[in-house]
Image 1 (cartoon, rainbow, N blue to C red):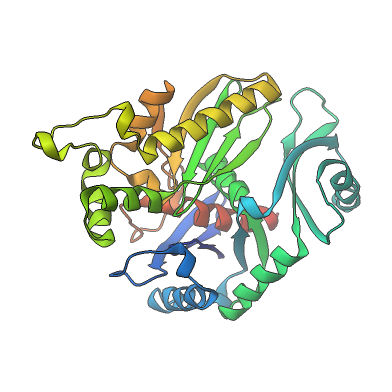
Image 2 (cartoon, rainbow, N blue to C red):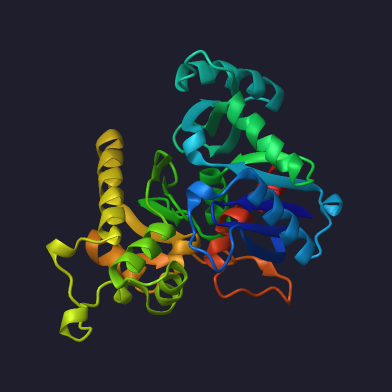
Length: 353
């Protein structure tokens, strides 16, 4: 079995899969809140010890024996790494290992620091039959050492270390067919930041960018506007969604959206708009077919409709369990929060080929 563990800023999550002839079977998923459930969430006050405790409790509560896992896969944030899609001549894996070190010097800003290099073969190049597309990933040795120390403190044996945007892309490729023409956009909404991913087949250039807005900002803005406690705002947001932030108290609760009441939702949409414009300018590609929302914040009622209206692009919440054989007793209403954990688990099977 492959154990993927997503250590997020507010929740730690896991997904366990096993390989089948048809692909992957999902065996279990679960999560655990990192801070106190009854306290106001403050990302600046979450320390390493909180993550260690949360991971250990999650493993214990779900009766997970990590020693039974063939591979444990964890990940680091996209903001802590550099991701670049390159095209190289197809070659044996041992030669590709050496070639990637050379390619990294050309494509990744190393600035003299000790750097850890890894890569994933994305597939054959659409136009040049003797070449392949490769996702080249790099991070500093300090980032990797810090991550490995956290994993060891959690009582786990470090295995494969992935990067969250690549994990989300792997999950998407398993759950959905990437169109031959046009681009798909994934907005993975975390607690304090979100990751924008643009992907497509053929000559479409892979792109990812971190955005400084997440679900925590949704809740914080609502709490301040309504003058209620953070946990109350969190419950209200999960129940009523965007409408809870757009009701004008002075006119009996009718919905009112105006320029003067610009919301955090407007801000994240504007970040997405600017990022897609940048992508289009850099690549000449701007046929965005659909936007998929993933992560815990994707479940905010009304958010998909809001994004679709503002950007004029069809938008939906990503269903990460789609096209996957699921063990009978696995169920969770907030499936999109497990996108990264499931992508990490799938990476274990990909690395095992």
